[in-house]
Image (cartoon, rainbow, N blue to C red; front, top):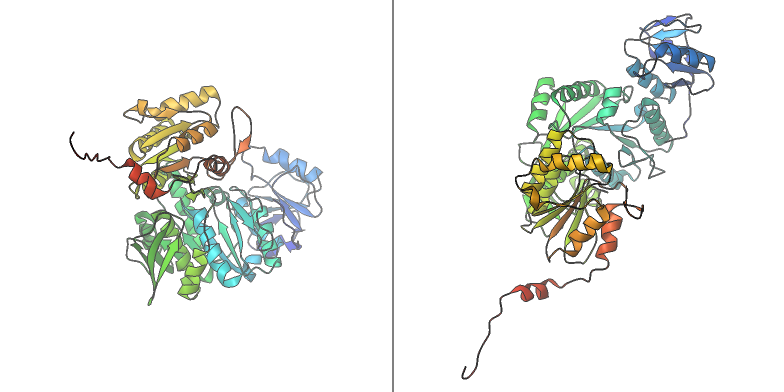
Length: 508
């Protein structure tokens, strides 16, 4: 991803007053790069960011490419000045922000952090604020916007240079607010260091299937660092329904606003009976109460809506403006996204590729009381235990399961399928159709009136048909199949299924 931004010459002595600079009184630069294979004018090389490469060799390569200085954690044999800092990752991020002109100081900035739901919460906050302020910049794993250009590519492992460029472009486009989804990779690499935040939204600390205790502690430590980046008036907004997050908040005691569906919170939502395909809840914030209706289903998504409400409440916005902004968001690609159709069944798409996320999606659809068929992709990156857990969720939560395998080779795919079936009490009840397009068509054409279909594992991402090599998405595939199925009036179908009563007149 590339953004146009103004670059400023900065002094490393001013940015890092306590750092040790060897070989010169100061180092001034217009760019700081982490790759030694990039050449530029007036630049400094950040050594040691790539743990798999040789820092000394990379430093020599950088000097040969014209680097004016080296940013490092330890003294290196070098013919150019070097700035020695305690943590090169944090220093690299801070200097990138300084070169970009510290744009976070000139706009409202919101960080979204947690083990789940970050993308959905970020887009809901963006929708809410756009309704109020018209221009909003956001950076999520589904895409980015600098408030002027949308559908920009965004990387879940974006480095500090990419974030600084995006933030600078957003500030140049006069966006009043920027929302950043901070992934686990970004937290580990400290790529957001140097950004000052007005609000940090914590969606939850629930352990996901792929996060062990060590990783969870690392995320907690990163969250503590993010709190240290709050502006003087900064505020934390957190999910009070998450018990582990509640305990973390109690330990650190930040200035905070809570939200939740079940726990006592500053911003609360109460579930109200809804029509098929939508959910409604009553929102209470302060002394104001207002209903909110959304086409995005699930309690987990309802909590993300409450998080967006809490952010608007923190900014002092009127509740009716907040609710209108959230209701504008009709869908989130690949997150419980409904496929528009008048056919006999309801089809939803979700990126659930972990057991806990799949369970949430299936539970959401099962609330209707109608049978749920799940077309599930065998997870690509998962241990045998995780695959078995995925199988247990499928067998217990879905009425019918069709397994597909589009990512792995035939040999690896077969092994993963067997490991997944190890978690099932009755493996014979699960159908295996490796071709995903064929599996989706089978599920749709064999469905009955009122059935619910969940296409899980790919979300909005594109996959390849094994036979035709055609690249498609679940949405494109399902929509094309549903278009060939005539709509069936609900009442007529119900009457057709009723038992027949034969009346006889006269003599038998």
